[in-house]
Amino acid sequence: MARKLLIDCDPGIDDALAITIALFAPDVDVVAITATEGNVAAAQASCNVQSIVEQLDPPRYPRLGMARGGDAPLTVDARRIHGEDGLGNTGFVVSRLHHGHPSEKIITDLIREEKENLTILTLGPLTNIARVFGADPSLASSVGRLVMMGGSIQAGGNVTPAAEFNMHCDPVSAAAVFRSPSTKILVPLDVTQQCAEGLSFIDELPPDTTRAGRFLRCIVPFLFRSVRQHLGLEVVYLHDVLALLVALYPERFETSEVAGDVELEGNLCRGATVFDRRPRPDWRTNMEAVVRLDGPWVRSKLRDLIDLAGQRSGH
Ligand code: BDR
Ligand code: CA
Image (tube, rainbow, N blue to C red; front, side):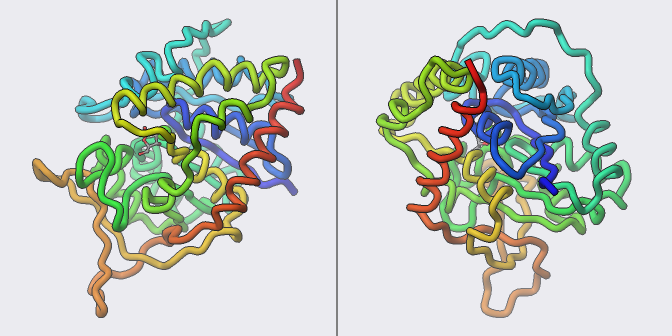
């Protein structure tokens, strides 16, 4: 039976690439895509989830969830990296504005329906997941597996010197999810920064005669331009795509049991993830973290799946 996958995300160009791959990947059924605030504000993230699916027109439409803003206003976003609209200023028009259910309702319903068959992949701040687990704590232990892109073990931060973007946006929710009794795998910056692609990646995208190729060729070049301009990098890190690969092929990654928490306060360290790595830790382990990846396998699997998205998405 195909694995059921719910993607909770804040698109975002790397989120959009992960969604494109997932919608056409073999052996996985993307049952829902739920929006959360992060790279862009809640309304824009919701609109982007809809326009990504409409641009790709997959054979099976997932349920779509609309984001509600966070409890506190966002203090940071990533529009300079992903564009004012989060998708490289492409100005995609959504054909009909979807007045769907809130993301939290879709996540709650699917955990109740699918239980341990469901993998939840989070590509943005953990706001929705914390609200779902907060409203009904029994759901945390029902979900099969939660794969979270975020945090950092030894790699420092990206949005601040200490914190990774998804954790920094909503550290209170991240801490609540870390402490929940769910089966979790963290995909931190330490490994996502090893999933880097240079400019030639654009030439390897599917041709623009395919739906997936047209879509990706519209959005991906913007990411290369913005990271070069604002971060001085010649490569892009495909953080969210690596997290998708972990959700689809967990057995291909080396993980380690870790005891993690999130710093909630502070001018310098808000949103930093902290792990008890002392020889005799006091903290109890509460998740696995990906600690090593097979670079050649990741590169080749990524290309295979992107090619497949081109072939399967039609013209
Ligand atoms: C995360 O931050 C966002 O900008 C990306 O989409 C990714 O989810 C990496 O820190
Ligand atoms: Ca993201």
